Image: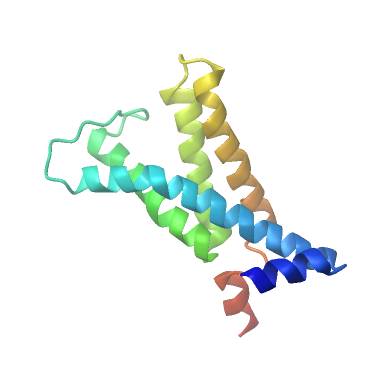
Length: 141
């Protein structure tokens, strides 16, 4: 990783710098979201009664399962860069639900973080996985 970073910082190649920036954005956005999702994943399979908000009216268990799908599976896919554009979509939707439904009455202070995450995921969905990803590696073959 150090060599990759040195190469990006010392080269005049804008494309390498962009690829490293996308890699950093994917890893940070995925890893930070994974910290939120792992607790939900444990709750889903703990055997305890599900106590989770039902912000979209599909039931607490289904809402929790959708959050786990997004915050764990899609976050991991984002980190490794596999199906990146598609993986970013559920993450962005989850963050919009958090900001505008779950925290609708909490004020901007509670909406700010999910909106920041949503901006990251929308950006990744638009620009793709970048050079340093499984998507790129698989498409080259």
